[in-house]
Length: 458
Ligand SMILES: [Cu+2]
Image (cartoon, rainbow, N blue to C red; front, side, top):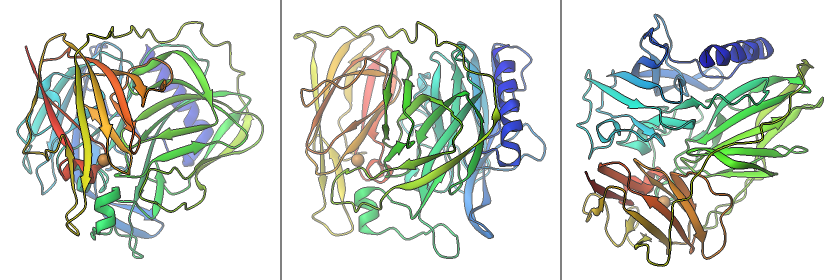
């Protein structure tokens, strides 16, 4: 029923957008059981026009259950309702081995898609992923090997797990932010320089849902729900909507206990935000502003991502609900065990920067041991003059503070920015057995050592 409602919303939204809709297609659910979402997902090579008339060779996902479905960037949206069983029959049509990681979803270890939790899927191979959608929210999926290459090449896609809240929205839009480094021919550059390795590859073309500065149409006088994820290798997005505020209702792991308003929304690689936007009668522009994430990255000035034209008036939004996310605090005290993880960068060897956690570079690391339901405070100390977004697999955590200062409302996070020369502390309960990776989500940093492993004994 909820999915039907969402489809109706989407089709309403398609009417509004017409041919300009930039919403990814939803993966076809082949299972008649309303509590099971069963899909076929294919990773394949394709071409994509980042620049008009100049196709680039890319890697992309497509819906394997729909005849004639084209590969797309982002890949097809995986939709489920809270509590659904999700079964993904994955087929690898690339010439490289790959895996899929369901970023932010609390999956069983065998479905986590990392090299420590599954064998890689060879070219022509298949793998069945199965998990329960335990949390409602906005997530994403992508390979978890050669991430700096495969995600850059287009293998990423959004996931919406519906919460069933009636927010009176005229549209529920899934946005994926990215950038690509293109040659003049429109092809993806295969050149990686030292700056790319140090900062995470910064593209020269900035994208929203795989397109450069597209337009959408929103109905005047309505409320819309916008969900954002940053899939870029290294770029941070610092969004603004001049003349409008974002009402943040959720982030990584689901809804917050209460919404808050902000004029700018900083989204580090891997992070997600779920916001409400009130559409008036004037067009809007979604832009990203410079954010100083270290190493004197130059300020390119504001970059427009999306133009929002205003169409004919839609139904006026109703009152917002009085209760939102139920986020029980993870109890911590002065006696809760603390674990320090120190992030460092070593750029002394030209073109061979190494990024470490506690002076170890993956795969030569000492796993962190844990037992079920144990609670720890992790203290992530950033000794580098550059921000690092820290991502933990398998379980969500709650921020405690950043260099002693409060870090916003209580909410479930799986990816958190650790600013340059600062310390972020978060509380985590080890509630899933298995081998879970944690790493910087700047993909070049993860691939060059800044990755570790938590082993939770059953
Ligand atoms: Cu990093």
